[in-house]
Structures are given as structure tokens and as C-alpha cells.
Image (cartoon, rainbow, N blue to C red; front, top):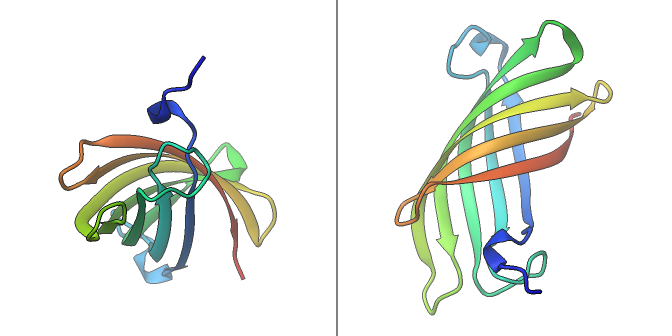
Length: 140
């Protein structure tokens, strides 16, 4: 039995830095600005590096909100835009990228949390696609 590469789990590695601004708390669009770099493996070898990877640099605005009945869980929306660079060709191809995410944050302690999100993404010249993600955040 062979696994169809498009349905194999792939790994994306992301590092970002951001800050929540108190004066933006009432802003309906967002209260946190982040900048991130993501390495995305879009090849057929699942978690291993392939020549058809992508590198994405994005600026993002996040709107955090509390869930009244759950003290240890909060939610967020995340609007992002940036540049994706496809590296699997003779020349690197740069494309505009955008996305919208909805997620939940499980607060483990004052400084660490686990987040789960669903994203709806668009890269110019590529169809809309969705991704489900889970990650860990440490704040200092």
C-alpha cells in the first residue's frame, strides 16, 4: 500500500517574535504584532528535507480574546501577509502569501503555552489551502 504524498504529514518549522501592545487592546483587528520565518517542506518525503521546500517571511497581526468559562484557555485570530520563496527550481521563485488563522491557546504556566490552530492560506499562483498546526510558545 502506498501513501499519496499529498496526504502525508509534512513538517513546517517556524520561529517568530512578537509583542502585545496594551494600547491596541480595544482595536477590533489586533493587539499583537509578530514577524516570523517559516521553513515549509512541500516535497513528497514527509518530515525530511526535499529540494521543493519553501521559505516564508511574514508580518502578522493577532487579536487575542478570552473565553469566559475557561480560565486556562484563550482564543485568537491571526491575519498574515508576506513573501514565500520556492526553492525547488533553478531560480528561486518569490510569491506573495497571505492567510487567516483561528486558534486556541492552552496556558500551561505564566510563561509557556500550547496552541492549536486552523489556517486558510493563499499564495499567488497556488490554490487556497488549509493547514492544521500545533505548537509551543515560551514568553519571557
